[in-house]
Image (cartoon, rainbow, N blue to C red; front, side, top):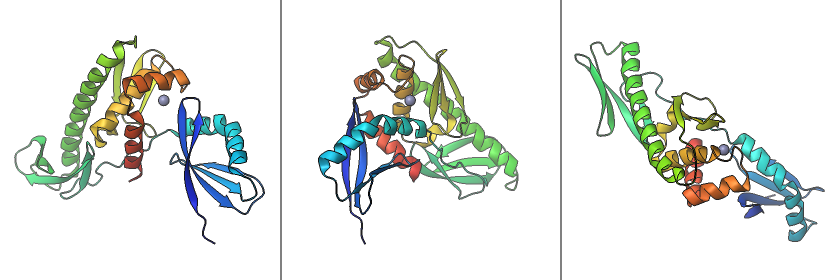
Length: 240
Ligand SMILES: [Zn+2]
């Protein structure tokens, strides 16, 4: 039997939560929230749209809470073998690593390649070091620049100036602490700039509202009216 899923939106406070509705042969309504941040509702064929709506309203706080908990991002893989031809992703675009035998000099992005110059092409550690240095420097420059740019907007609404920390994080793109520190995942330089700006604005808003309340989302929407589109793009990127 083929199950048809319909797309719907669950309104919860200021939040709009998209979900797929599946009409199935079962007795009770079931809601499944996946780590990919999708919501699937399996509803018995015997109940009508209004009953589904009421049942989902009741479960909306749980659905929202579960989505927030799962809002932990899994960064994309960086080059691992450090050999010519290997793909790396930078600002949402794919590049290839080009290892060239020559006197050592700092790695550089030229055309669609990240050029790395080493005296011995088999010196994987040397290639890794040069590529990592380039990557870290680009991450520091780009993340600091976009934090500064976003802060110009946020500061007008009383968001305190944050301290920026950049490091590798296993499960999140960004986080913020109550002492005014924003931590950004170094691998954020892999995603497009408009997604980087979304993560930064999201964290800046947490400096004023340390939760995912209505007030938090209304501040975020004021600073970045199209944040949902950016988040969607970021989620797609993560899954690709
Ligand atoms: Zn958050």
